[in-house]
Length: 319
Image 1 (cartoon, rainbow, N blue to C red):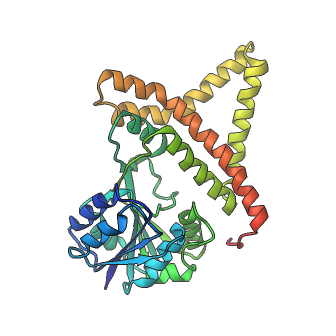
Image 2 (image 1 turned 180 degrees about the horizontal axis):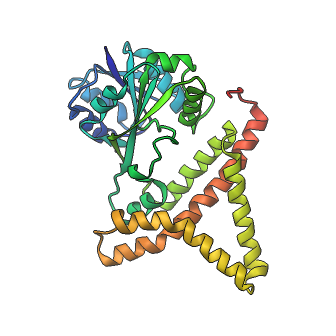
Image 3 (image 1 turned 180 degrees about the vertical axis):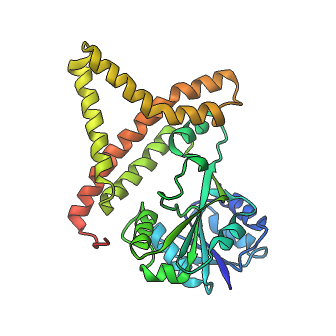
């Protein structure tokens, strides 16, 4: 049975070589590698074309396409029955593709691989601790696959109408939920690993989480989670203005902050920061609550922007 890998790219000249090298290093090489380029102007296409002699590579040009549209164009261009999907900003473990393909034991199964942080400095290690759960933290019975690391049958993709092209972010979440609603089974495959580099600075991180939350708003996703976040920060503002002299309220706030930071701190101390020089370790530890705050502010700004877009443009009903 034929097997394909599909990727979307846009101005990834600085990262695409790392991904292509990791595809070449796979112990099971895909029968097809289809890359959809959304209009790169930085040399990405030239790098891809140079690798065409070493891989069964096909490049599709679709300027202006969203990630969802690019994935759909790439999948449409394949002849394969089984398809793995990843992103340009990662590198693949050598067993990634073969492990995902082996997990597709029937057409009603969707194989979800893991993605783990691949930081290059102390800032990225701290950001990874805040944003990326470790594979052992993922509940196998309650998760939604990321399209950084997923595989499915072509028939499953067609059954739910492909990725939703009206979304520019969170398209994989909607795709997953449509698969669940159609009766497909997600299989957690932690051995299939991709390595994902966190954003390099705070502005890039803010934009990332703003866009994610804007996508939530566009798709009408997770209103309860966002409402809880707004409520928590409203309570924090009230404490700053009126409650700082109330010992019980201050104690409750301290407990809440400790619980909110417990997992990032544990990831950082036990895994991501433990081999750093002392000064960098301390800087990263101090940065953790700042990054939590930045991420929350980005989400609180992005979600209403998505709700506004949803009200203005009336996207398709997908549930």
